[in-house]
Image 1 (cartoon, rainbow, N blue to C red):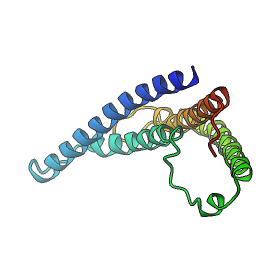
Image 2: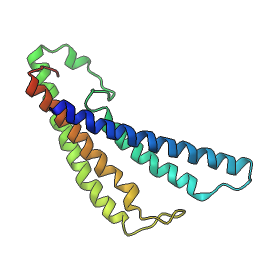
Image 3: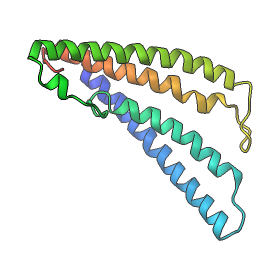
Image 4: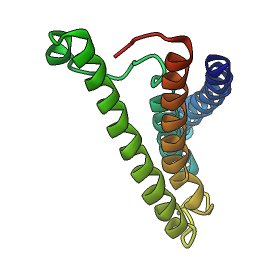
Length: 159
């Protein structure tokens, strides 16, 4: 059951990433065309690309949590006996959850502060670009928890 929930969450994130990356590519291409062919680059294209990059980064970070896709140096853990390697894996995940919680909490406070300002070119509240931080942190924590719950429910032993 946990695996199905995580798969559904990942499908939604996949779709969001496809849309966000497509919009960012179109925006950047429009900026290049405007700058070099029309001799006038619209100001909103760079701003939207920066805002979308924040969302893409945070959503992408969450996407790789379930598959252990983040870059890691595992040479020390790989030489440990299985029980100790599993304990180190659980400790790692506890630290990741702690950091995701802190990132989510302080990221949301940062987004609330951003709500008092508007962006320069598009004049939207900075709350929306800054909201990528707590949303990404929450998704990181959710997908990590779902992976661990699935391992416990199925009895698999992974680090």
